[in-house]
Amino acid sequence: MHLKKLISLSLLSGVLIAGENSSLLSELKQQKLNIDRQQIELQSDNLKYDWIKQVMGSYSKSYYDGKRGLLESTNGFSITLDQPVFKSGGIYYAIQYAGANREFLRLSTTLSEQTLIQSVISAWLGMKKNDLQIERQKYLIANAKIDIIRKKEQYDSGFLDSSFLDQAILAKTQLEKNLIDLESLRYSQLMIFNSLSDTDYMDITPPTFTMIDKEKYLSNSLILKQLSAQSHKAEYLKKMTISNYLPTFSVFAGYYDNGDNINDADSYNQIGLKVSMPLLDINRGRTIEIKQLDYLKSKIELDDKKLEESNIYQDSVKKIELLQKKIDIVVQDETLYDSLLTSTRELYEAGEKTIYDVETLQNSKETMILDKKIYEIDVQKVLLGLYAKMHGKI
Image 1: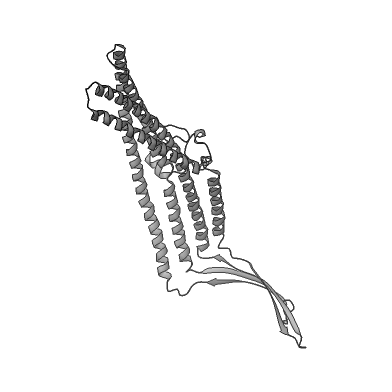
Image 2: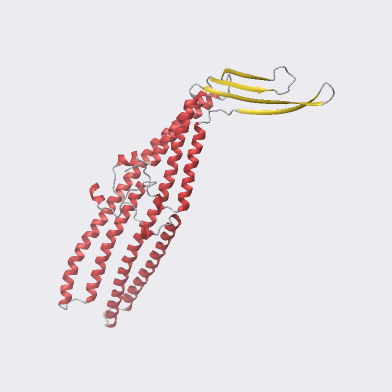
C-alpha cells in the first residue's frame, strides 16, 4: 500500500513527542517524572566527578601525665588530600562513562513518559472506537427488531413456524447483550484514561499519526538509542577496569598542626607525588574478560534489537495494509447499499416494498460507514504503537 494512502487515514493533529504532550498526563504523573529527571541529573553529576577525592580534615585531643604528675592535654589538627591526577586513561573513561550513563537514564525516563502518553492516547482512541461500535450495535439491534416484526407477521400469517421467530428474538437479545459489553468496555477505557490524565477526554486533541519510512523509525527508536548508550557504558566500563591495573599518579598534600604538642615542631606542611599500581591480582584476567564479554554482549543485544524492531515495523505495515483492505471492502459495500437504497425507496414509493425494507438497508449502510471509521481508528492505534517508541522530531 502506498504511504500517501495512509496519510488520508489520519484522524487528529500533532506529533507524539514526550515533553510536548506531557500535559496529557495527570499532575501526579508529571511530578514523578520531573523528580526522576532531577535525580538523574544529580546522580549523573555525582558519577561524573566521583574521581575527585575528598579533602579530609581531622581533629584530635589527647591527655597524658605531665612532669609534675598533673593531667595535661594536647590538640592535633590536620587537613589532607590524596588525589589521583592520572590513571592511565581511567579518569577520562570515568567521565565518558558518566555521560553515557546520563544519556541511558534520560532515555529510560523518556521511554517511561512515552509509554504513559501512549496509554492516555490509546485509551482515548479506545473510547472513540467504543462509541462507534456502540452506535453500530444500535443499528444492528434496530435491524434485528425489524426482522422480528417481519417474522412475527409471517408467523401470524402461517408462512413461518415459531422456530424462525424464536431465532430472531434470540439474535436480537444477543445483540443487546453485546451492546452492554461494549458499554462496559468503554467505561473501563474511561477509568484507564482518568487514572492517567486530569484532563476531560472531550477537551483534548491527540496527535495525528501518519506512516513513516523504516529508516526513520529505526534511527529514532528510543529502545535502540537506549541500547546504544548501554553499549557505550559497557565499553567505557571495560576500559576503566583495564586502567585499574595500570599506573596511577597521585598528588598528596597535608597541613598538620600539633597545637601544644611536646614535639618541637607545632605545625608543618606536606606535599608530594606518588605512583601506584597493583603488582598482583589473581582475578585480574578474569575481571577484564568479564567486562569485555559484557561489552560484546551489549553490542549483540543492540544488533538483535535492531532486527526485532525491523520486524515490528514490518508487522505494523502489514497490519495497516490489511486494515486498508477492510476499509476498501466497506467503502465498496457502502456504494452498493447506496444503489440498493435508491432503488428500494423508488419501489417503496411505488408500493412494491415496505418501509422496513428501506430502514433495513439504511441501517446496514450506516454500519458500513461506522466500520470504515472503526478501521481508521485501528490504523491510528497501530501507528501509535510505532510513534510511542520513537524519540525526536519526526
